[in-house]
Image 1 (tube, rainbow, N blue to C red):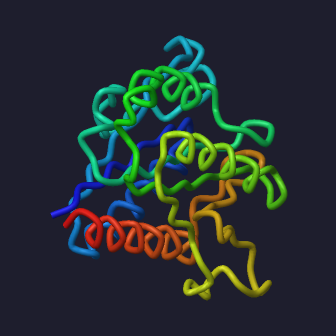
Image 2: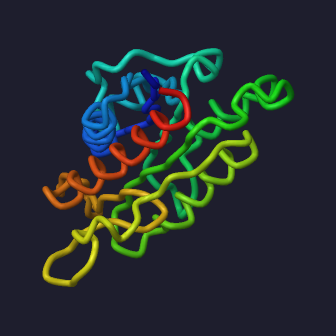
Length: 199
């Protein structure tokens, strides 16, 4: 049975919810899924004062964990159209895995969130996907087999490059049913691909 790691960073809980939906989709495919998060780099008092969600249940990952999985799905909120510094700092430590080719041929995917509809979701997804491609991984996005990302009847995330959600400027909007369904769909496709390659 293929094993997939859903690895995320979430300041306020939006990406945490999306990670749970991705993992649910992976499990629906018959593959195993673990959810882990990257270490917080912001001092605890600053995070507390900033309203960060500090009670997340997912264990902290180590870089060495990555090679133990057949698939890795990265998720982080958008920071000015790019990857959060916490996720970037974690991935920057994976040079040894890259040098050994330890992740070559594994399955990868990405998901994100932003405050606004045009807040840099796709550039963040591409930044995550670029890391995965440098690691030699095969990318699975969120194709239009997920029809929920089409239409303008409501505000919704979603991109062929990966599942997304829109949090609003004050973080008050949680992922919608459509956005969580998109994350599940992407997770299921990633799990199915990992199963075909490694199951």
